[in-house]
Image (tube, rainbow, N blue to C red):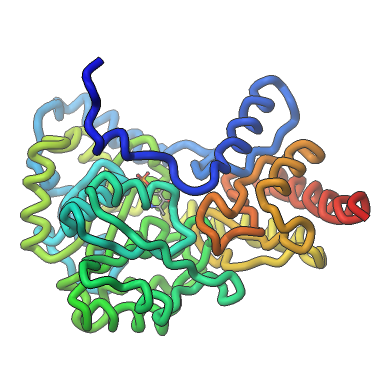
Length: 393
Ligand SMILES: Cc1ncc(COP(=O)(O)O)c(C=O)c1O
């Protein structure tokens, strides 16, 4: 085979490879062991039936043709209305572009604001694809951690210290994967100040915005930020549609118009019948309330079941689909902890250090399991934590 491009060979896995624990847990479950999988970030339930019916009707209704590059007008209108609710800023269809899931939105945003050789700041702990998305654009990045003892909130002084003359963008995610932290207004205002002062783009991943603990605050709503913020949204989490691959970007009209050119050479538009089903799901909020309530109830049940376990400290865990537990007083090496928990109690979790150094000594628990299974997992975790220290001693 002739040599592949350095761009494609440079897209390498990031961080410590916590996925090994996940893969081992998965293989053992497939082999028939009673493993509880708390490492997967995908819903354990199907897409709401109303959305499925809308898609079936759309397929039967001859929607089999190309669609406009930025998305069907009806879909863009529905996305714009959702962005008005998410970001608190009146959003028009020309302010949004449909993308293939949040990930393609993130890719488009990074391609749209960074040239090769430019620099970005990635606030950590972060979603696993972030570093490689910058690598794919030929851009460099600096990871700035959010301290665990500060509830994984971003710190302006740490971000300022990482700025370089060629820094063009900051990427944040709230509610956060993996920590479940929901960034406070005060911290977002401090970030916005840096962006305005240094004329930076803020890439704001808000795919978990409906799964937050309280009011969702989008930095796009802060003074002077709508013109420099690209918000990444997705149908995956809010509407239970991970496999449908539909998301969108919200930003200044001129940038959105330019990003439509990227779709010309990538997706050439999105599937018509999926676009129609997504528009209907957005217009009618299919499943949104139920899914949000389900995750809120699961978070409460799981955290309640862990109450009184002195060795384990809950950090972040205010929103999203995950809970972050500081297990460093049981075992400082989170990867070792995750392997031992899998071996002894048959629970598969992600080691925190896979998501950046700030989450070292932590484990990420996915809430993508029904409540009784989460309760059983909490029981096994309790037992593991108390036995581990006794056995070590
Ligand atoms: C923080 C975050 N951003 C973006 C995505 C991408 O989601 P999708 O491409 O399914 O919309 C995910 C998926 O887990 C995520 O956790």
